[in-house]
Image 1 (cartoon, helix red, strand yellow):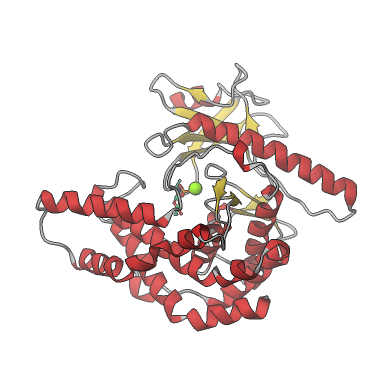
Image 2 (spheres, protein in one colour):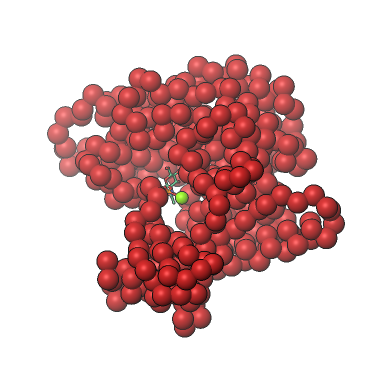
Length: 371
Ligand code: GN1
Ligand code: MG
């Protein structure tokens, strides 16, 4: 603990550090809430970036700086142009006492600190229709705020991230290695997952093919707009920001809206082990898309709408595949509390995908009605 306090004291904040405690449920980085003695900034967020995942964490900080600057200018421009004002916040990066945007400790761990967005909450589950609409709005708002960013200024902080065929290729390699090593017999869950991937692998290229054909194009995207990253104002109940900006990069916004839907429309969450009960809630899907399309509808064309169903189906497959591959590899990417943890997470995503497939007609109708 003393060591964590010492690290927190490396950052330029307004007051001595009182305490540091673990915070949140991230699968990759380690997050801490730092409490200060002083007011008004009584808390801040400190994170250790997982360098097994992010090989160049300093590039994340370069991106964050460019991103904050861009959004700040866009918001200032809006304030000048219109009277309408809605709270929108981005985490502010804290510099170290030496004026850098990160701190590397004696063990070579990479630390950064950011402001805590006050008077707001990130819920682990969708609370109702209004919350769902706000979640969709938040993603649309975020994508629209960064839509005019020069993508050549954004570093690719995680090469291959959200390119589904790359995950399939990696899965095949891992499986091949395991066969050579002649591992023990598969558990029923492992058998289910292998069969599931084999049956659906052909469709893994659907979004990348659409990109290749020019039907979908690269735009700046968030990369991880899951429910836990959407901040809701404690008083107005409106969405006021999306946190976790490590994976903002050029990509297909369809991976984003797909990810937001697969996360928000699964009320049992990613961590349940009640696999048979996992369902995709189409009523929430309608509200999320309603909120989302009120913002991005202006830059969506015919094929953007046409690929929405594929997007949500694919991202559940992709995340399930990522969890399952990590299980086969021995949990080297996602933090796991027990040996089968990533296998169980994969089961949840695959069951969710089955439910998405069973709801295809409903989802397509929702999209058509909202167009
Ligand atoms: C990881 O670390 P966290 O929990 O913010 C992952 C996302 C997954 C998510 C699933 C960099 O996000 O892609 O969708 O878990 N982030 C990375 O919960 O791989
Ligand atoms: Mg994340």
